[in-house]
Image (tube, rainbow, N blue to C red):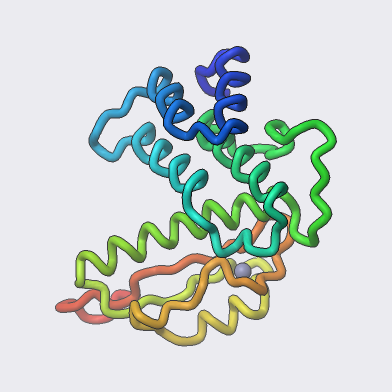
Length: 188
Ligand SMILES: [Zn+2]
């Protein structure tokens, strides 16, 4: 577990519950100072900000109250650099009645963020000509496997995690890779 004391953990939770993202991030910064060079603390801070402020497509199925709790839990997991059991951070008796597990939903949230970040960089760089879906080898969901059969240009990239992904235990394990770099021959 990270360097947060139990008191700081409780303080973090209180700030997140109050929707006070700025003070939550400030608290995070006192424990993990920003390095300003893309180091973990900076990336974590960006991730926490995104979790708290940006609508995630993959959480559209969830009711508002549960989505709020899920975001708090996900932010706590990132802040404390603890990607184990999300239930550590959930309210006692937090009910999660969905087909996908809480862990799977949170992993999908992290995945959606990571994919969006990559896509943004690829679009900005202008050098990525084609992307492909890379699916896990051990039992990928059928929809993801079908997505992996062809290449996509950056304007037609399918949603990852796949909305119909059947990996309900730990979330969609598929990802996107840049399969063609402009000026180079095919790299994948
Ligand atoms: Zn999948």
